[in-house]
Length: 268
Image 1 (cartoon, rainbow, N blue to C red):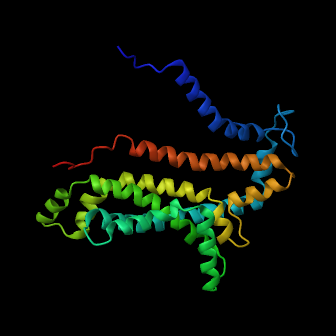
Image 2: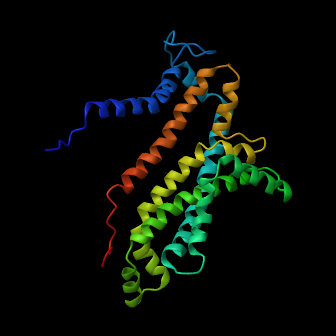
Image 3: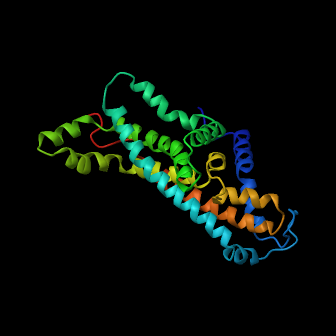
């Protein structure tokens, strides 16, 4: 009889893979407490909490963090609206060129970020649009829409159309059907997609480099700080914040979508 337990070799390979992925992140946490402020020594010569106070009192850190949060929030809001509408059109309608439109929607996230960044920068230059907060938002929305669309279209396809037909037959108008039938069925998918979109926008670097001009989001600030060895542990402290801010939405999205293989009305 075949055993359900994994072999020793498979367990070792799994542990090695996890260490390869997460050990560098753990090192960031360690170096946030080091007493050495100009280089990375191993083991650290000492441990201290002073860099957390230094980071807290740096106004440039707060400005970069505020910009990243505002950009991620607006980009996610735009993605939720456009991604949901596009998913509804593709999943619930039949028209010529539907698959082509679906491909065009997901194309931005498949392209390298540098291509998207160059394209947006060229478009801004041709239209003589100055770099601003909104140019960053537009750049981030290009891939945030894809994340929401992928979650929403999958949920729309698993939601039975008979529920919508029944709602309309019972006298509900379009708004009531959306609020009472459609939205409860796709709510967790939208929430998960929105959280993933927020996390992607918050730590995006490449597209931001081409669309930000002189502005600094938090990831751009971190890159510039790494070039200068002054107070290097402060960068690691900020990196810890980025890890938490991006990891928490992803974990919440995972738990929200876990066990949602069955949707109300499916197969009826």
